[in-house]
Image 1 (cartoon, one colour):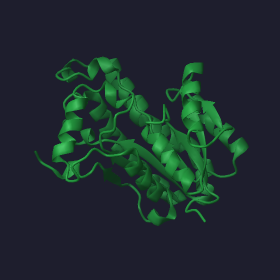
Image 2 (cartoon, rainbow, N blue to C red):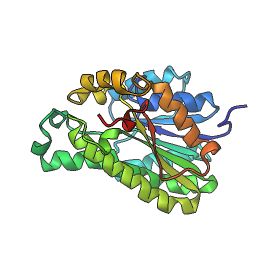
Image 3 (spheres, rainbow, N blue to C red):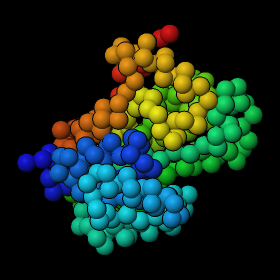
Length: 260
């Protein structure tokens, strides 16, 4: 018997099989959960996500496009989900965006207004928008909303720039949502995952320096693996964490505990 037998939910953010969202889905499916998925608009993005989902052992996935910058599209996806599933036990938010032009070392002070606001919109506001849209289904049985953050939300990571500001907003949004959603039996948390080479992280200036630093300075003397985050996500989605909400859980091999 799996820990999540009979549970179902939506995973947003699989770009390929190296995405944190992919590892989270792998862990949830392995525990018996049924996952639905979204992909970025466009045939190329659909093919890429479908290929990654197939590697999870799912040959006929529930997979629909969603432009997270549109509240109407978010609502539409939740409506479609409700037509196919009678419950939503979890919502995985693993999306972020920042114009890579402003993710170079020393460029933060040059960030234009639009790039600043776009990053916060996609990286943080969408957690609020998706949670609001998912609430009618999730409150039926209670559930878990989980989003992905990073230590650059709290301390300066050279090159992380506007994405760090957006992740700070994400973590604060999580806490305010947790305070209100608890009344409906919905828990909201974030995982602060360590550095993992993904499409998103490769755009950050100085990413290679971060990786090398972790290998020598992290208490575990290594970079985090996708499976590390997947296992923690399984805990936060399952009833094992029934009393945990409004928390930011570090899964970074201990990097956040080291001062220099």
